[in-house]
Image 1 (cartoon, rainbow, N blue to C red):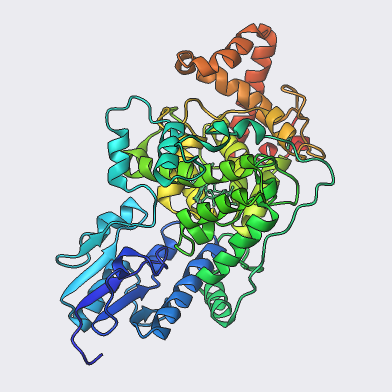
Image 2: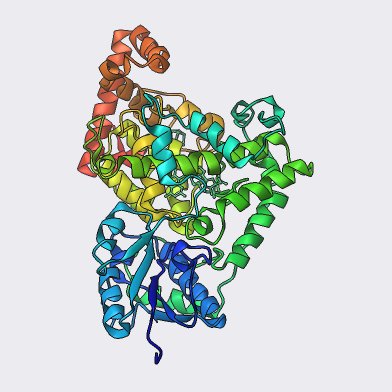
Length: 521
Ligand SMILES: Cc1cc2nc3c(=O)[nH]c(=O)nc-3n(C[C@H](O)[C@H](O)[C@H](O)COP(=O)(O)OP(=O)(O)OC[C@H]3O[C@@H](n4cnc5c(N)ncnc54)[C@H](O)[C@@H]3O)c2cc1C
Ligand code: SF4
């Protein structure tokens, strides 16, 4: 590096976008881009090995693309002997070596990193992350003074702001904001499910796979079969494939689950979207264009767009609005440790075995699997939000705290006491049976709530209602289950609670009896 350096521009692993704010005024003649693979980020939770491969490979591809355009990139590999193995250490090493006039970065996706980033270099400029539709300041303004922060109202504002699926008169297309009622169908037998595109590893990805294999010998998950897109070009191809083949079924079967069918009609774009390989607004515009061209129904397009300009933007707003306190909330006083089967998948509960098995293999599960199987079990069994948070942050390729935490603590666990959801998403085995084929062939009986073979979701559901009856009594949306519980004969209520107590005791003891019904008396 012979010329004096004007600006050191730091790009993080989930910021591999040419549109990232830190690069907006890049001068290739005077600036250097710093990208560093560091153990601190690879190890702060036990990430799925496919997630590590995804991030490192996407970083290397992005650095190569920048270099090909004449940009000077200081790229520090994980196995570089001089690597300080922390972001702060690498920024400080680069500052000492290059002596830039200023250091510029883009705000990260995690509170933990933002806190650290402020101390990376004297006078560091931290720019707003412009990859989102709703700036944090606008979300704060939206939230200010509201007694209820329901997503639905935020979503309507986002529709108006973006003009997505709006008529020229400013009304929602189809006369309704939300077509969710049409999006809860069970998958008919024999329904064809188009497989998502696969991206076979190139030489860069293969080298990263080897590195991760060597360095993360005890890492969670399976590394074989890595096939996520790792460049913007690949991510756009994956999106186009989704819009052409799976979006038409997305609406109707959004909530369905099926054995050995991990993706169904979902997009599987969150791993690429969350690291910057896709732009959320452009994704929604492409989906809207497919609807306007008559290629998909309105319930599919609306259902999908709501997930992105609604839920995705909304959970990010909640995260930055409520952190750091949000990360400590435990409104239901849940204290149990995470059972081992969340990592191994070894349990007689077929639904959990399916979802965890798929998660181990693919670093992916779709929303209803995360919410209504593993999330629902964690809620009903009273698992500690810290442990559940760490699990979700570790095991999915798309997991970053800004999106993972509100979904986990808020939506799945109700640990925020109702900031995000109007009631706990608690459900018995009947829900899983209605929306999936998991119960067929399960060692437990989904029709039973008491007895050795009773489905744990059933007795845990009623036990949850009974345990939290006082708290839930003031919630009008919980009136029905509370009434049903009260109307149950006393001896049945006692049997259900005894069965739940025995099961939870086995769970806490790590007894194999909690994993398979046949081993219980
Ligand atoms: C307990 C729990 C933890 C979760 N953790 C994460 C996480 O770490 N990272 C993550 O991106 N999503 C998370 N989600 C949300 C959702 O499950 C995933 O975004 C979705 O499964 C990704 O798969 P897909 O791309 O096939 O999504 P699709 O179902 O095809 O939806 C399209 C897109 O909408 C967005 N989206 C959908 N639902 C949500 C939501 N609730 N919150 C934010 N964005 C949403 C995603 O960007 C997704 O790619 C979590 C949900 C739950 C219940
Ligand atoms: S019977 Fe219960 S435990 Fe078994 S798959 Fe169905 S919901 Fe899950």
